[in-house]
Amino acid sequence: MKYMTFNSSCACAGVANMLAVWGIDKEDREIALGMRLPYLFEKECNIYLGGPMLQSAKWFNLYLPSVGFSMTEQHLSREDVPSYLSTQKTAMMGVFLASQEKHAIVYQGRRGKHFLFWNNKWQHSDDPAQFCWTADELIRRLDQDVVVAGLQPVPVVPIADSSFQPLYQHSCQVLAELKEELRAFCETKHSRNEIGAALNTLFRPILLDGITMLELLQRWDLTEPLRDVQKELLKVRRIEGTVLLSERIDMGRLMEGIDAYIALIREKCDAV
Image 1 (tube, rainbow, N blue to C red):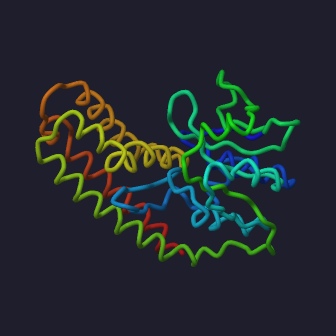
Image 2: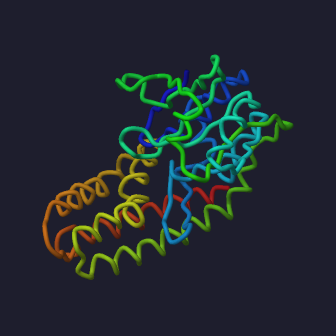
C-alpha cells in the first residue's frame, strides 16, 4: 500500500495505489512532482486552487501518460456506484468519513457482499488502512453525484517540458489575481464567519497548499514568510466580531510571499 507523505495528498496517494494495482511503483510525491504540481494554480467556480487541490483527470493526465496510463472519470449517481465498481479493476472516489470531510479512497475489489477500499492515509496514523463496506454503507458516504476515477493503459508518452509553458503562464496570472483579491479582502472589515469561509476560497492556495508545495521543492526560504502570515491568520480566527485583517496580519509579507511564488513559476517557465 502507498501512503500520504505530504499534506492533503490523499488523491496523489490514491493514484499511486491505483498504479500499484497495475504493477507500477510510484509514490505520491513522485506523481506530484511529475505533474509539476508546485507550479500550477487555477481558479474554478470563483475558488482558487493550487497544489493537491488540483486533483481531476485534467491535472493527473499531465503525468500519467509518461508511465503508460490515462485517468478516466465516470460521472454516476451514488446508487449506481456499487454496480459500476463491480466491473472495475480499481477506482478512486471521494467519500465522507466521520469528520464529514471528503477523502479519497481506492477500490480494491469485493469480498462477498462487501466492497474493499484502501484508505489513502499517513503511514503512522491510527486511521484504518482498509475499509470494508456493504453497498448501502458505501452509498451513505457518497455525494448524490459521484465522480469515479480510473486508469486505462495508453502508449507511453514522455513528458514534454515545453507543454507546461502555457500552464505556468496561466498560473502566474491566477496568482496575480489572487493577490489583488486577497488585498481587497484584507482591507475590508469582515466577520469571523466570513473570514472562515475565505480560508478555503482565498487563503488556502497560498497559505496552506502553497506552503506544502514549496516544502516539496525544499524552498524553505519561500515558506518562512508565508508561515508567519499563516500563524497570524489563525490567531485572528479566534477573535469575535468584525476584523480588518490588514491591521492584524503582515500584509507586506503576504504580498511579497505571493510575488516570490510568481517569480519562482516564471523562472520555471523561462527555463523551458
